[in-house]
Image (cartoon, rainbow, N blue to C red; front, side):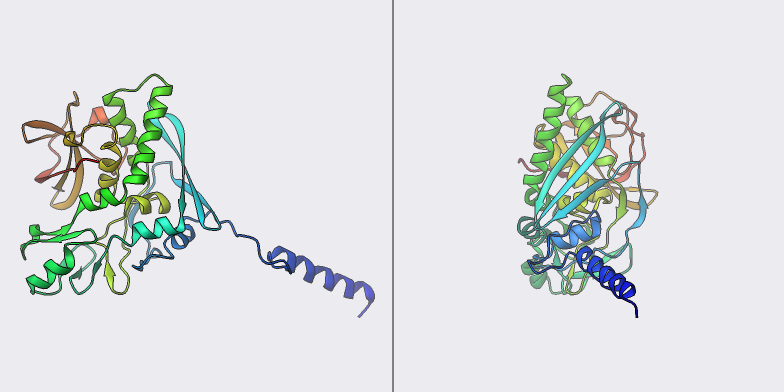
Length: 314
């Protein structure tokens, strides 16, 4: 072997060593732009494990997505979306691993209570009602009886544990509207709806080992992983909006579309056509959160088998 070849080999080894970020002084923090890797790091300290690697069903994007970088224990998420009339704005927020993991730990039920029957339905795993009351009425779920409509996900619990994030988003939207001299009741609803609608759609399935999550993505997860489904988006929408308008002007509405389960949000005092539902003396316009349908062009008579849920005050 000549001196030149020996020198070339040593040089290549040193380049590979330096590019690996290894060195005598220790490794530098790695940065990642992969949402999957980011959310796995953010949830690493959670007491409830989740499988974020299972791909979502019916994934759809609408030209926008939330992108992030991870630096040490902090993730920075950035979301460019059309605020009003197609005019784009940029929202940014940061998540810290301990806080993110703490929120994630507050949601999830043990598989001894219920679990998936198939991709579309969950079922109770025991007929012991005392056990179900003791173990489901916490961590985001409730049990009243064995009837299907008497147990499930407690959306107000989800909204409450996500209040800090939703408040930040609400404050950002209010400030953007004020700075453009367009702050109004209707524009607040419209802007929040746009924020939620343009997040990519996907049906999450995070169930893992001893915990199940009802096919639901918490607001923190919807932002960090950049997709969520109808009830996940509706909870995010209601959670943000209750910091901007009166909470009793907002209702969550479970319903059906062509005999498939669905969820939307009803908002009162909106002068637009569409399907309305009456509740406690108010008329609520039903707003689709899953796909970009303008607030003034909501579809009439689309939803059936409607059940209204109130939203608590912030």
